[in-house]
Image (cartoon, rainbow, N blue to C red; front, top):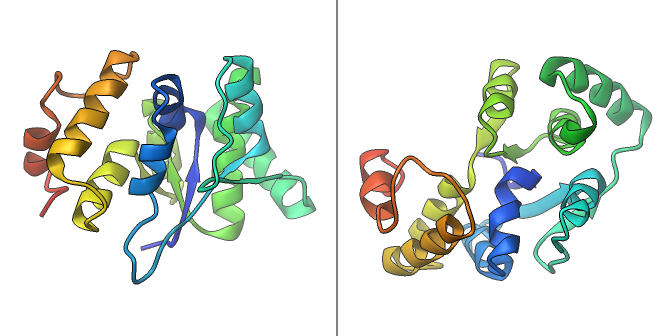
Length: 175
């Protein structure tokens, strides 16, 4: 499993809106014996800023995607994702992960499917939350409370409030 998680705005948006990026960050640190590096791109930060959301967090490193091999990858991923101005964050996240290695954390369905189809490792924020539970960084009950806050800020998941634990168990994420 990759030790680097590259976060898209789709996975950060509702945590920022619910003022719970710090809690998400605690869960995203990974296991203590091999903590994860968490990063996002400057394009994602700009996208969040346009939505009046602040992403600045100690746990989340911001990288620029501006080296020649990264820029070539951006062009490739823009074509693959059918990216317009709104999709620059996803494009740069996929490009960085493609060039440097790492798993993307994307919740947008189309972008997830495309990234997987072209060989990237893709996770959603619910996977990160479940991994945080398994690493002992949270209890299922506390994680469920976080997910409820995300739902309250407009996040859409395949379950209703208080349904995270049951869903994660059925999905095999807590085994």
